[in-house]
Length: 224
Image 1 (cartoon, helix red, strand yellow):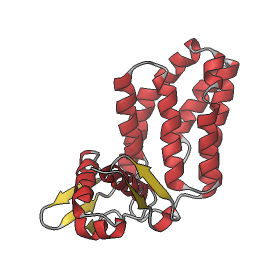
Image 2 (image 1 turned 30 degrees about the horizontal axis):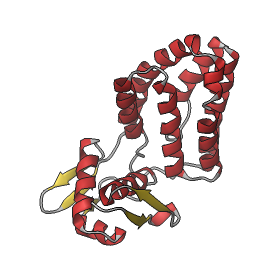
Image 3 (image 1 turned 135 degrees about the vertical axis):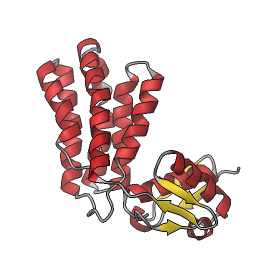
């Protein structure tokens, strides 16, 4: 496939997304549309119609949708298109529980072994979440949020852990059907938890780290 530029649509504010392939661009654009609620749970979308929206053929759309089906975001309907799957509050709570079971003990282990200067190096990742939150950019925040958690978990040196956690994290960011758009204030509060966590890690305050990590999975409503 050739390099291309696809203008993002709808709530993405006309931003352009650059990727190494048409399929990659379409996949990222569709993921952003899912997070932002532009692709509505329960609705059916056809490959040709989405291809027309993005100015590409239906083939890269179908390829991207096949990946989203593997991720559990959509289901393929032969000769009809793709239905965006509906999430329940219970499913999202279960995802949060699994993520906490996975990430909390890892974070506490890292808090005891990683030196302060390494945690300092993650400040730009935390700042990126704050910038996206301040702009009210829900898809941008989702990307920055995953990048922050990925950077933290990468300190384990366990690529399988990072991959599993990334998949769970992405799934947890898809909104409920008929859910209101995430408020900017919720994004800002969630981003502030990243900064507070880094402060505690740099200072070596393990009790504060444990409290902040657990609250990050159970107390906020933003798509983290």
